[in-house]
Length: 222
Image: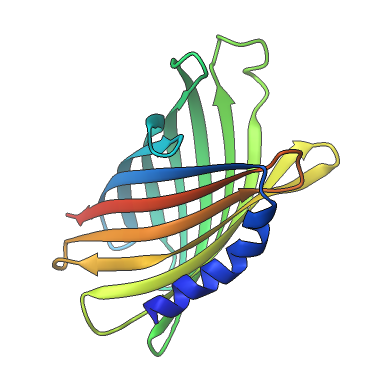
């Protein structure tokens, strides 16, 4: 099953990869901490480092915290804040402030769990340091993820995500998509790692970039 997911990603990514103008290889590493503060509310905090330029430089660093509310076993709402440091051409970093609002629906049928998430995000860059910092960059993102329960410590998954820029002419612009395949491995009930390959591509612009990313994350639940 895990091999099947990787084959699907390769077949989907190959046609557009051949047409790409700007290609890069990246490494994303993260630490994620989670805890339940009640039966319905949970808190999540994570830090991520993203290396680009063929994994030769630290392009992005961010810290994020979010609060989630479980309406029932399937439906969850969450809101979060992300502070981002984005590398400039002069090797300094710009500060970006992002607010996130998510609605997720999860359904399990036998060994397959499907999760559908809709995210609205708004971001302000270099507050009080740029002429247009008051103009937010807004996106609507939709994501579907499929996991297969192997009854063992590892769980293969596949996901696809689309990015829609909103608040610009002609109103909504589809300009990026992301395909991921990988495996979750649980050391125990509290701790585990996630290893994934990500194909991230910009579309409907001149000289679109394409990122080929290896992602490695560690998670711990209190």
